[in-house]
Length: 366
Ligand code: KG4
Ligand code: ZN
Image (cartoon, rainbow, N blue to C red; front, side):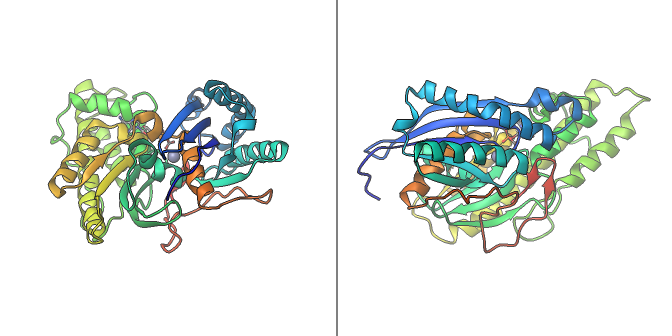
């Protein structure tokens, strides 16, 4: 699409445990720039509860979101007058948090007369490789985080085909639960990865759930039960040796890596059958930080002659720049929402596929 003028959007995100605001501009030449990207996390508020508490999250979003908006505008060096529209995550996610963001965005839209654009949080993640790497449609996306896990063919800002996803926990949840079982700190992903580096991945025989079933669906909840069982076998009273923790983490991580590698191969077969002009796989979500997972995805892509992209971590995890960017594409496609924009706890990107069953602590999975 020919770009004739620069478009600048303010984006808001509050669907889980990060309150975020950002300003993104697409210039006259079509290049996108993140002018600011403010994220205020809530880990400290939820730590004592071992997971995200929706009511605490919602209250914290309502308290912090105005501050995030001010900071994002300040860092971008612009005022609301220079914004073309306000984009906000209007689902899916923890409903109290989503409502906080939508109410704030409506207030701003009403006060300034600027258009309001409701954005699907998953679309934000899925479109990020266009913001960071200028990927062209259609590309394959693996969204893998504490709240999501799915393969999507991204065809446009509004057309997505889900090839499969988790039927229970997201991988990040499995990493976090494994860390909890082994007395490691939260969030568990980085801790498990670190411990795995000194462990023997072959000592414990963990399952590779759903590899025996056709298709791209996955399951991770059984894996954490297997870790629990193996841990109980090696524990002596209340104590567990560090070497055992390392081996359990290495075995668990290898199982996740093997499942993601094989399911990615299958998703690529389906995607490549469509003969995309410039085949590419992008990965996003907090679990994309895992070096073993990145490495195996890169290998699978090299095998298939497919480009591999992983946006920088700050844009892989929950943020508002991805919402502002998705807002720009939707704005250009003519989307405008009014004061009737509602917050949706569930909002599958692919309307043709049945909703996924999985819905863990961090909310719906599709
Ligand atoms: O995308 P994200 O920041 O937000 C939510 O989904 O809420 O993802 C957070 C998740 C957590 O479960 C965390 O343990 C996981 O990403 N994570 C990792 C790593 N770094 C973060 N999992 C595995 N390995 C890592 N290095
Ligand atoms: Zn997310």
